[in-house]
Image (cartoon, rainbow, N blue to C red):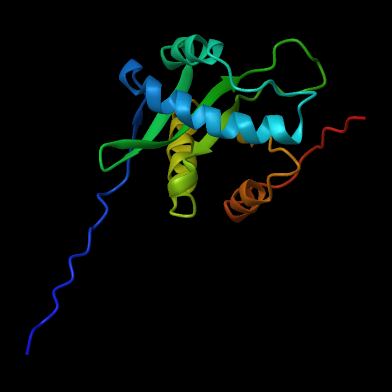
Length: 165
């Protein structure tokens, strides 16, 4: 009796690490994915993806005082996160507590719902703690139900809303 042998490809563990210039092609592609979605929903706010984004993203990779990390699995960049620390020094009625502001959380279309966004945010949490951030904030577009569900599952709560007409 012949025996069938099944070979399962096991994914390598996810690594979250600092982005480097060598990651730029993958980062540009991930940014294109999210940029197209944003442009489709809000063309009056978001431009379609363009070649200028490459230089913008490259400059962000080495920016002082910012976090730009990537999620890598099986030798492939499958997500990235950007963040910075803000300290209010001009508005007298706001506290001066350091606030971590997440700029972007992007996960490759083909790798969603695998814990990558959660891992990126956990890495950001650790980074923010080392800089004494009192809170982590982010903005999410109203149409992005999947991202909102992730953020809520991770304990984020609506603090304000941006309204437009």
